[in-house]
Amino acid sequence: MLVGVQLPGIDDEAFASSLDELARLAKTLGLAVVARLTQRRPRLEPDAVLGAGKLIELAGWTGGDGVVPVGPRKPARRREREQDGEEEPPEPRGGGAPDEPPRATLVLVDHELTPSQARNLERATGAEVLDRTAVILAIFQRHARTREARLQVEVARLSYVAPRLRETGGGRDRQGGGIGGRGAGESASELDRRKVRDRIAELRAELASIERESGARRQRRSTQNTVSLVGYTNAGKSSWMRALTGSGVLVEDKLFATLGTTVRALQPESATRVLVSDTVGFIKHLPHDLVASFRSTLEEARDSDLLLHVVDASDPACEAQIAVTCEVLASIGATESPRWMVLNKVDRLDAAARARVAAAHPEALLLSAKRGDDVAHLRAELLAFFERDLEEEVLLVPYALQRLVAEAHARGHVLEQTHDASGTRLRLRAAPAVLARLRDALRGD
Image (cartoon, rainbow, N blue to C red):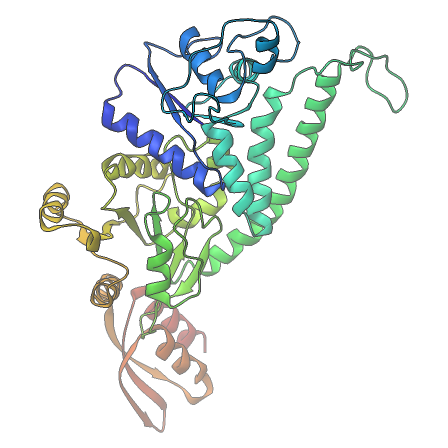
């Protein structure tokens, strides 16, 4: 069951797109959406998000009574109301047969809820309630495969859970202190929060160790040509990664199918070696704790020589998705690197739509990862970008330093190679940094 409140300043198209995206998030979790309930309001109801009438309508889908109870008692179910002879709540719009209205066991709210709002909604509906942040965290937790990604997601999840811990009653009141026990007067919820804080500290310490290793790997790649694929989730970044590098990265029509960073060489390799990295996708209202936890992963994009901003041109909400990506990149300091926009999935557009997106973004590349000619075109553009500043020089490499000849072949274009009594003479075209490294090595001899 999806719930959304249309606030002032949000137009109908943006509101519908946001709910569609929440439905896709639900599908990614393996959930079936039975209905959508929406309401226009000047602001979210402080107690339970929805107004009283809409709350009763929502309860009609879940079997609750639509009333926020006072105190810690559990929410009443519809059958209890029927036994008491109380008036039935209105039948939900779009429901099933009158005698068997569909029941929703989970309510997804397209807003960030306060702990009290989530608790009151659960009491009124008798169903579990998840806000947008909780849904995204659940998907990240399910899709995290590497140790680093699992730790990052766990830190974000615990940071989300900590302020939502509350008393559960049933003998968990304040207890006295003692050796090995809680401090005097420390409540159960305070103990739980302290355990969560301690666990977060442990996870962050372990993450710091992994991040140092990741930083060392990025440092080793700092002298190489690097490209990062960035963009909204499910825009087609992994499809481009597979097309450009021939790697077997996961490609699924799901949100957040990729969480870790994968780095592969552009294929087929040429004298100008280019490393391509696939990064985690972005989404509207990406939880701040997730951005903070994945900062080290996102730094791969910040440190790249070139960003390929992949956009699903076939998505009606692509303009909003472009804005979200730019916002997240700005938050991690990835605004200095050159950036190309790749309007992906143009094979799904008709001529009029293609002309419209081309006019809106004249500087962008209109391509499709499924078309071989487009893949070859982008590969050629990437090589031209990294070869634009190459310089030509003649180097004489003594026979005692023949390892430098192999490095010259690996890091640049050897235009001519001859041998004489002094050593190997190379006419080399390479990046200034590569030529400087080779000169330093020859002078060191």
